[in-house]
Image 1 (cartoon, one colour):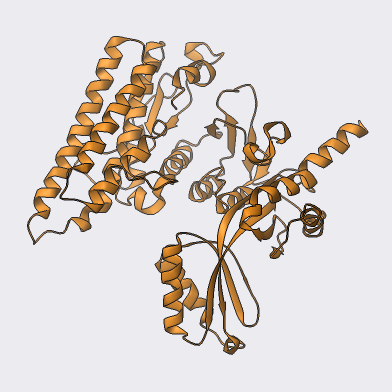
Image 2 (tube, helix red, strand yellow):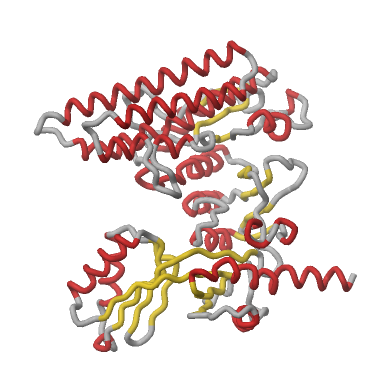
Amino acid sequence: MSRAPELVEKLFLGPRKPDEAYGRVFVVSAFGGITNMLLEHKKTGSPGVYARFATDDRGTGWQDSLRETAERMCAIHADILTHSADRERADAFVRDRMEGARACLMDLQRLGSYGHFRIAQQMQTVRELLSGLGEAHSAFVITLLLQRHDLNARFVDLSGWRDDSNPSLKERLEAAMAGIDLTSELPIVTGYAQCSEGLMREYDRGYSEVVFAHLAALTGAREALIHKEFHLSSADPKIVGVENTVKIGRTSYDVADQLSNLGMEAIHPNAARILRHADVPLRVAHAFEPEDPGTLIGPVGGESGRVEMVTGLEVQAFELHEPDMVGLKGYDACVLAALTRHKLWIVSKHSNANTITHYLKGSLKSIRRAEADVLATYPDASVSARSLALVAAIGSDLSEMSVLRRGLEALEAAGIRVEAAQQGLRRVEVQFLVPREELSASIRALHECFVAAPIEQTRLAA
């Protein structure tokens, strides 16, 4: 999004004439880094406006963060908008939204000074309010930019700003799209939508893709496109090298679900479900290479007998061992309840007669709390957590490839010790558990085995 001027030439307009640019709806996210400043940094956890207000609702640190965020917003659109009148309008837009947010938070502070009121009950609403500011800003700025290029762009604000109603998401979208002529207008829609369901509560940072999917279904779109700065490729180019990656080209929603589970989201799993049910195919395209068709995701996957992606992530192996478990029920339910209670993401699991192992993504503090809960119920059990890395080879149909055997051989040849390995009956993914420090090396070894080497063999044969 921060490269918006390039997107005008490559994406919004491209080779089209102005009157051929319509028939599309764009759902935009916030400019890079803004949501982190409004909430908290997604990767490092560094506090933003929300996090500072939540931890010190009587202090003023959050006001400093709000001011810094407003200054950053204005600096971003100052680089994008070339006309002074557009910059002035964007500056005024930021002032109105940020001052409104500041007034709301100050009012909450005043209420919190009375013992009868509990600010904690309103914190989810605060998070919803702040999260929508970034998308509203980017959509407004992009609209101004496109209008300056003689496109009839229309700012569609779903954030509910100064709206005293509380509609459902469906009602919000239907009202926003009513009266828009897609043959002559180009809607620029905020990726956040205020609604009674509470998108942040339901989907956290994945809300923009959920809005995008609902709009595609609502409008009966021929195709839903997600534009990224890179192709959906066979591995992380930072690990295996850009020259060694291969664009996937075509895959299934089944594979997209596996990628989401491992943190390599082609699309939020809830958004994928919406598109799948609406029978709308999804295309992941390179925003700055519009001539490339990208990767099509649909009910029918890519060719069988091909590993489409090798990826992985760091996990904690949460293991419950109890000899008395054999033949009894309830142990698994106890563990699942504890993991759910402490909001731990279950990446995968394995069990045998007396041991249940869940491979988790989450903080060590939450894992220790879950461990205490399980031991409180089963004090004679042995519960442990161990740091590992889970590496997966994923494809639409791996049934005839002997991926498990070949993967073990490739990792052994690379000198990597495999702690565990497993595959399901659907044959869309094979998982290898390796020492955490071997994550990148394992991805390189498996990518070389299943992607790079077969391509080289094909090239030599030709």
